[in-house]
Amino acid sequence: MQAFTPWEKSELPDPPVFRAREWTRLIGPGLLMAGSNIGGGEWLFGPLVTAQYGGRVLWIATIAILVQVCYNLVIQRYALYCGESVLVGFLRTPPGTRFWIAFYLVIDLGSYWPYLSANAAVPIAAVILKRLPTANDGDLVRTLSYGVFLTAFVPLIFGGKIYNSLERVMVTKLTLILTYLGAIAFFWVSWDSKWEILSGLFRFGALPETEFSWATLAAFAAIAGAGGLTNIAFSNLVRDKGWGMGAEVGAIPSAVGGKTIKLSHTGKVFDLTAENLSRWKGWMSLLLRDQMALWAPACVVGMALPAMISYEFIRGAKNIEGNAVAAMTARAIAD
Image 1 (cartoon, one colour):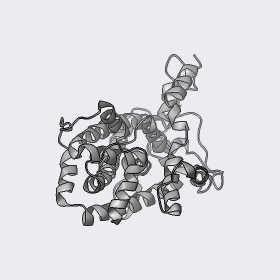
Image 2: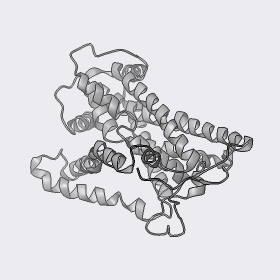
Image 3: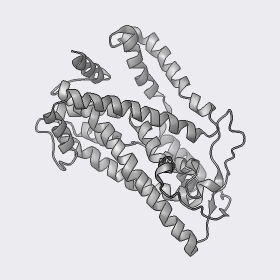
Image 4: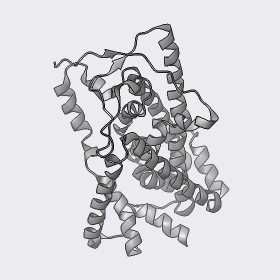
């Protein structure tokens, strides 16, 4: 087994103190990850499930998100303690780096394929064509997919520190999406539909009253929150945000304007003194607040709002595939 360089020693920085004028310092990885997590699952699969089965199954998303909160806190603690990504921590364990690299390459294979770029290209094509694209429009959708995929690299090229660029992008995305969906839900969705969805988040154990697919419900649980191995990014973001010992190891710089930022190849830890342990409690409180006040609520709202809209406008729809659920909802709102 290949041996990793031992951790270096340093002092644990003081956690930020909440002040009204400096509230932006408390915007952490939770908000950034919430922005990235509100995507294809919340826009397509979640509304499809609620349109077919109603809001009574949304408790599955609640449990999935709460379980992920526990996992997120665990992997963030690692980065908080040593400034390393938790993936590096996994590589430090037996049976060694070769095994774990191969293991994670295989189980995360699906994330390498830029399918979300193709999903994002469909609504752009629909705007251009003024209809949902068909198989005959494959060249247009493919070209738009390439454009979306390449555009996604822009925040990684400029901005000094990649984290800062991503944070600005995701805060903007969250603000626009939740404001738009919130306005539609408030003005066009009936109170009965709102109650159906909101109460469904806490109707633990309820199942659809009609015939249903266990595979569909399992997939619904999988897409709630982050899904897959994307939660691991929380540990990277804690480091790049500069929380805990992340402030001592640096962050990933952008290609342009980030030459003065360095990322240490080895983590740094602190001695377990009374002073450091007191600081540690402050950092852990910050992590808990970030998860419970930002990430989890944003994920729940991001799931609930599209579900309200689909339940209101295409309730009871059957045999819907692909992007049709979004198209049907859009047509219903327009009509």
